[in-house]
Image (cartoon, rainbow over all chains, first blue to last red):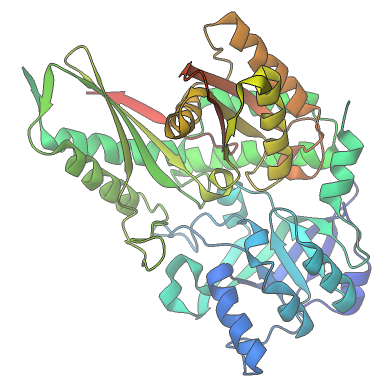
Length: 185
Length: 279
């Protein structure tokens, strides 16, 4: 595999445009967890044109709901959840400046189209590698919707979080291309 | 009649909830390791390596393999000549609450499917009880995550579809699931019975260890064939393309009504969690 690209958050359009599907990335900086319950709330605010509890411009959302932290740990295991459940809300968030998403699984056509239109990138993290991923998380704080428990929005400070570019801003889709490449009749 | 203390059930279930979530089975660990040799995709290899490293960390530090520590699904084989002092279902529920709370496992259960709030202790569990001869109770805890469960399917096929129809249904379901169930997956297949029983068979199939074939050579061959065909789809680790999509396929069958031919596919993620104890 090629040398990983080192990226820092927040992302600029230039950062996004240099990424292509299959690229291996090590991400450092602040990212925000949100699952579908939090997405619904963000979406409803954005639809009404009301301010969000956090500014999404240039930011990355990580689809994740961590397990509780054991004493002495920053966070419990925190792998990606299925991204598709956030698809209905995602184009709106991309429209208001979200630049990146981390999760697992294929995205809808609407999300892929919006990623091209607003120049955004979707990274795959390894589902189920939650204990390993937690090692890359250096700090955590709840920034919104504490009542949602595991589904609250958390700010995570990550260091060298290993990711693969699954969908790029050019319409590339590694889920489709990868499967085609390794398919045998 | 032999008697078992209520607390023995509570403690055993609590321990099994933790162990199932912390310790990847040796059979699964070795299957991923073997897969690493066959995987052709560099991204796929990298993912399989991450899964092994992840399993090592979880085991050494006694933390969950995955943050989705699942719905606690319990299989009971209850000997006819033994009784628990008290309500066994209550004891199991208490054990799940204790295991998930003490073990820092995620609480993922809502009290009502539509109007519910988090129950905050991962109860209730889903309990399947079978009465068997003897004076022992075998308890199996199989925590099941949402990502893989959501990709499972039941189909009321027609007898004319036959085994070829079942094979197509299994492969279509796996390809449709793509990366969502966290491949490399384990596939449980139920054939026969009726609408609800076939789903139970598919779930029960997931309790087998990797490499454990159906005792009927006919179905053992179908299991091998399906494994090969699934691994030829190219879905690969985490759906990003590759050779290793599936670690094993297990088929469980039951007699059927002459008019019906039900089939079910229950997909498990690469953690394939299940731990048992006999009390």
